[in-house]
Image 1: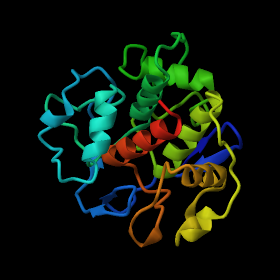
Image 2: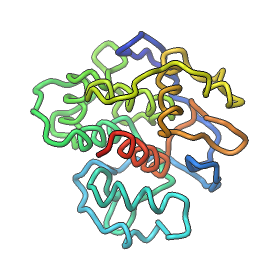
Image 3: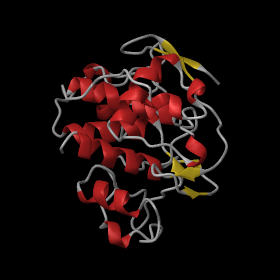
Length: 236
């Protein structure tokens, strides 16, 4: 089901798609799984953080091990429950809002939200802050869709908007790196510049067969990897 997004740079329609079920890293290695939507209060920061080495579902032979270690150690993402990171679960818009707020550090509380964001929900403050800061916006009509899956291009677009908010360097969105990928035409118009920026700065590297899978749902493992890449780019 497609809903209209109010974009920061341009207004666009962001497709919340039911992409083929697989998860791959940002270096080209593929880990085929039965990925499902995350419905728990995942990396909201409300779960007790556990040491990355104690995640029962994150083996040190997995491509995402170092990324999970990195974001967990810095308390940017935590587990879905004690001892579990759930790397192959799809992440939601509410989860991404919380991650972005965690990246920003201490943020002023914003007493404003959306019709579908309850004031006492774990992601309420994060969504309100991200929206007020112009990093993430709703669909229009007062709705945010906090439990909708986040796509890979939405993730990249949000990271770009956060980079703009933080006035980070190297924000150029021009170049030809995007053309190296076989599915570059599937990148939505609103996300093209952000995707080009992400490629130039090593935030996303694509999957096997030189594919970006822009409208595929992002897994928690993929998000951990891209957040790690972003933090290195931003010198966090």
